[in-house]
Image (cartoon, rainbow, N blue to C red; front, side, top):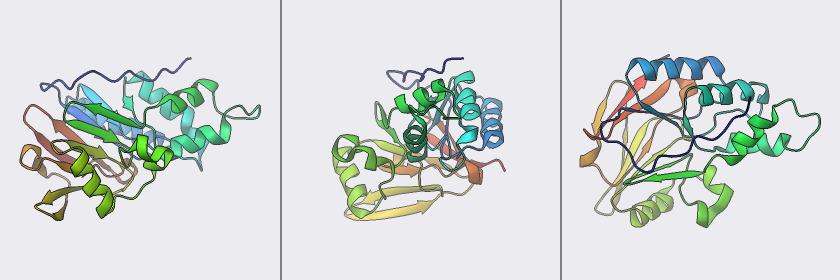
Length: 219
């Protein structure tokens, strides 16, 4: 069975309820449970912000990629996904389907949709290349984002705890997001939202029309 990377839509439909997750790290049952959770909450579109797989346990990669394809999930490449490709591409003794390797290889590292940017860690792919997948979100990186994208929201994974980072005048302010908490995103733009790790039970539901974001814990 072939696996094709789902093409990113040109724009976000404000009437859609959008599911956002990251860092499932090869946990098939966790990923499957999250997809069920999103569907039960009426999410028409779902994004996975990378580290779909775990490079230390590549044996689950085929199942994880199949789940994304079967459920029409938009994916972004994380550092673990890249490492799976590096470790297995072109090897005769690779235990992964060639279609899985090709799927992971072709995942985008950043998606831009209107006033929304999505990445595994940092969106500066042109400037930093592959290191953007593992780059730390420090003061200089956050300041660069706010300067480069003054009216946008960055959704990211990699860091495993949900939080919002925004700029007040010249000060960076971090707000930890608790499960069950709903955030009015419109009041915080520009901002950087870390959605939390799926393998720790965190995921987000975003309603762009209402400009609200809700953190959930399903484990």
